[in-house]
Length: 77
Image (cartoon, rainbow, N blue to C red; front, side, top):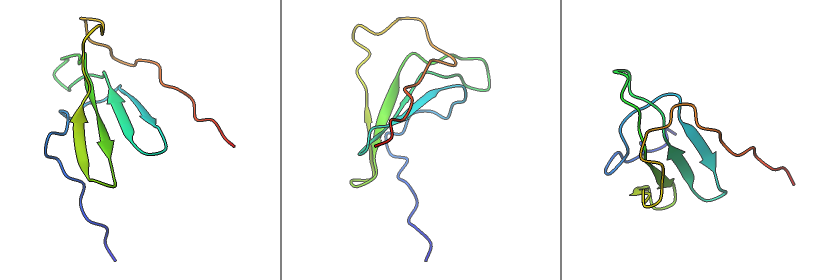
């Protein structure tokens, strides 16, 4: 069986050199850069149960973009 495709409605633009964290229920994507050298200063979170992307507020976030921002290591147990 082939799993259904992930919705791209409201998904953030494609990027590399971003931070991505799995919270246990959502995937959070932040920062990174586009192939053209544009650096992103925002991100989104993805909920696989609802198959929905939601924007993350940039209020109080650094105004300049972040490429290769640090992520949070996964904790076992």
